Image (cartoon, rainbow, N blue to C red; front, side):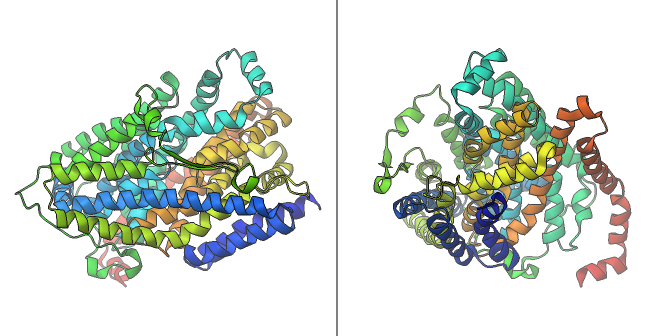
Length: 602
């Protein structure tokens, strides 16, 4: 069978997702079973994988789906507990003390707090924490999900204390030949090679691309969820948005170069929070005039509202302080950090409580679940502490558990097919037909077409891996060695190609189906996954294209001169951004015109 035809067949499970979920707006609970059966049929009849292997991959996927549902349950339980205790009302009051402008609030919660949570935990936890918090503050559920997904790009490569680099890239590249290559560059320590030959390049590319992410988040929020449906109202705060971006990415870049890949996102997010909240309180670069807010709730599109109703419940013990109200989120951050850093003993102890099903059905596929190490356990642990420190009643805490379980079960219908499809797709090697696994077949076909232009396309392959697998770490494991080999074949520094792989793997998280399902589930928006992906696809395209162009420019400037294809593409992206920002005042003036307001209202 020709490489081209095999690549087209490999693409079919992904094409099903694109057509039914994104194009035809089917809910994931209906689209993903079709994608799963297509992947299974290809594995069995084209790749000729043994039935036991397909069954084992499916079982592994179901177990992984259960672990995701556990995290979803914990995150919803945290929100419901804080709501029932009256803490949510106090948090709202605290944000009003900083600013009532929703554009500033979304930057603080989604971009900065989300980056810190990504750095400490990863694996979709930022959406599980930040999205329900935004809903609790009064955001439409759909706006919160879109914002929560968009920021899962810049901090992701250094999420979960550097796991995508220290586990993903390290495992993907680890071979005797690559160890010799690292030694030839002067890196006698393999970890130092990953940290300073590759991760520093990843941080630089994220620094460049991440500059516009807060502006994307705000502009999309005002355009798709604002009363006037205007990008301009979001772009109006471009100075503050860029300030917030660099408040996170400058310390992020410095930490990556000085300390390694464990702490850039964590320290970057925490430093950014301290800087930006202080600046917002003092009015620094804050927009003048009336604070921007969503339209009255009765005017919202019904599709924006989830099934989880956030109630305004007061504490039964008088006015709760902001510190006490925020304490559950502080404890979540501390718990996740304490259980993820290697110099503390907690991670080792928690990982001992582990469910393992080795060599399922006689295959080399093993399923496992580190139950106590899961972020879901951290969420439940913090809710128990919250019960005591917020002095909750037993019935109130019971209501939180009951509502959370109901929402969690709703996510199962989508995840129970999404994750098994991923596992079948990735475990499709070793069949009687002799073909490589489906993701590698696809990647090799693209590499054959791209030739020397590969640096521009390398992030797309990383994004494909994360889109399918739902994990930058898994994408890096799957494609890092392949990307390194392509870099050698086209005669460029292969560490830059691996860095572009890691960038794409991070960007792919913003469109990953089961991440979107999980984020939607925590606010009761199941069935609207396609709507979210259509919005975040723009950010993914930007985030894959710009670093790819910059990488091409860096690799080929010596051979082709500074004005090469990569430089031109990157310059066009930046010029477009500058033009849009520079001409925004005239668009805002038109929006303020009474006639324009009437048109927007219609």
